[in-house]
Length: 323
Figure 1 (cartoon, rainbow, N blue to C red):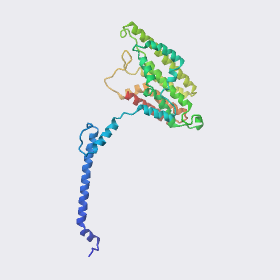
Figure 2: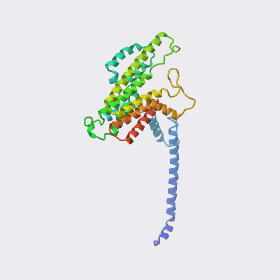
Figure 3: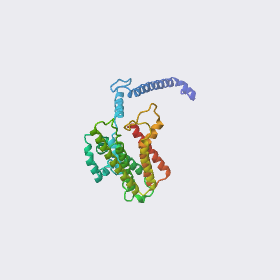
Figure 4: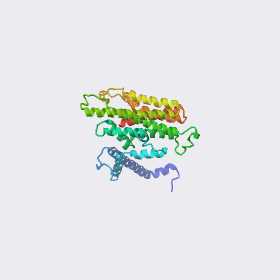
């Protein structure tokens, strides 16, 4: 006779319920044990050698190997730059080369050949600019174009001719100006402090003097071209922003202690605020103010301009910390 009341049915099937409860507890215990082993495996993935044995099954080492391989794989910088250039629709890897290959710079290059065989830093700078175009030396203009592309334009009529790229002619000019100013700064930093005590050989001293003249002349030429390009933008706010970035380059050279050759000397106590101040003026100011100027040319308000300024500043400081 079947039980008619619910409690009677529960009492009758109490043994079955007990067995189910025991199985559930056993399953939970096994799962906890597996999770503990998996946690130990995960902890040892980053610290164990590639072929070290782990306290978990046979399939875990494969996961460990692929994870470590992914972590150790270096990012492809050239691929990233190429993809970014496709986004903006404008090749920016060699923005400065158009100025470097002008008639005036060609004449300077003829004189620069006399420095071959000397140890003047100008030769290394020129080699890095021409042969290593796809590196972080030549990506400041690309960042400006990416900011311009991301921000867009408030007035779509301004992009009628450049609609496929989404970047106006003035913004492309600003990107080229940014690269020219940065290149001029690199060339000027190659000027050597001459001292008879350091360069006792007369021939070496003459080579360094000649190299300094070429460095100053070529850097000034690029700065003059940049200033001419700034004036052609016909925007006084942009001119003021970029001009103050150029002055920040000069101020950065007088922050901290330097040796006789102008190289920064390490300090006993590392101060992060001092590091940020110096590197902002030395690198972050141009990047931050160029990004802000690009958004300003698009007609955006103060809020977006400040965000672009912060982005440019932080990415420049990240480059400096990596270097």
